[in-house]
Structure formats: structure tokens, C-alpha cells
Image (cartoon, rainbow, N blue to C red; front, side, top):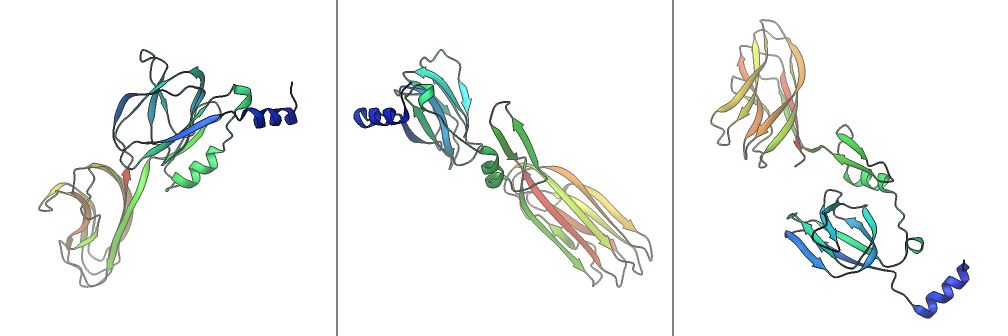
Length: 259
């Protein structure tokens, strides 16, 4: 086996191309586009995020497509490849193709620390996929979107909005967490959790959160999932209130589920 010094001398003399790389823009869809590049390694070195996905067929179109994301790759000899991707606005991947024997080209990585740091926005909303080799992915199931709420001490009238998501532009399932509180007062009060239409003229459905009796009060919290159409909203509104004093407050936190 040649020594390291001997390998260096061979490199100086032969100046071989051990790898090549290129960036693939995923904004536009492509279907089985041929890339006449030969190699023994195919690897996605980098990407805008770990959800940027392509598929590759090696050598012939009759071969089954293989999905690949950032941090994944394949070892096999190939003289060409066919790449396919759905349109993924703003996303790209960097492909590295090795042209040396497996013993002379190797990729080192530490995916767990990188992905967890870059992509995790909610520590309580993680799932972990371990493919059984060396790849570990951390991806969010939900993306934090917003929070809204208010506490009012001036005996808010029926119809007063205490918390609202505002118009939600994305048609998707949202997870909504809520809390409410009614301070001891001299009357009765109640609150609704409402899923509103896009025009905000009526509710799609509503839940009666509470209804305190005279000189009563209380608090509560919960969670609901809503299938939101574009520009619909969620809100907490005063259903009725006969108090002349006492604080009534509510808070909404909402998350958009991953596409």
C-alpha cells in the first residue's frame, strides 16, 4: 500500500479531478433531466433546508427513482444520471459527485447538531427520524406563527374580541392553544372560541368556553385543531357579560402545520 507521501506525489503529478459539484435550483419542476456526469458517489452536500427533495435515476431511465435530501447520497458506478424534482420555490441543493474509488473519497458529517440548530423552531414539536445508518434528521411538525390576547377591566360588552389570529392567509390545518380568565365579579360572563369565515361575517363553528354565574369567576385552557381555508380566522369573543367590574382576559397561540 502506498504511503501518504507517495499518494501526495502521485497527486502532484497526475492532478486528478476527485470530485465535481453543482447547485440545482428547485424553483422550477424538472422530470428526468439527463446529466451526463460520471462518478462513483452521488451526495447532496448542502441545501436550503432538509425538506428540499429530489429523486435520481442512475445510468438508465428504467431504473427506479431514488429520493435524496440534504445529507444523503449513494455509492455506485454511473456514467449519467436523471434528476427529477417538484417545484419548490426558493429551494436549492448542492450536488457533489465523486469520481474516485470508495477508499479514496469519503464525506464526513455531523447532521444532528446542524439540523437541530437550524430547523427547530419549537422544541415541543419535534419528531426524529433515524434511518438506521449514520443520518439523523430533526424536523418540525409545526411552525410557530403568532400569539394575541388582551385583558380588559372595563366590563367588556358582548361581542368584544379578546384574542384573534387575524386573517390566516394559508389554507392549512392550524393548532390553536387558548387560555382564558374571568375574575370574581358582580355578574355573569361567558366566552366563545370561534372559527370565522373569510369575510368575518359569521362563524363556521363555535365552542362555548365558559359561562360564570353571578359573583363567579374562573379560568381554563385547551387546544383545538382547525382546518382553515384562506383568510379565515380564530378568535375568542365575549358571549355575554353582566359584570360592572372585574377583569376578563384571553390569549391565543397558533401554529401552522407543516405542508
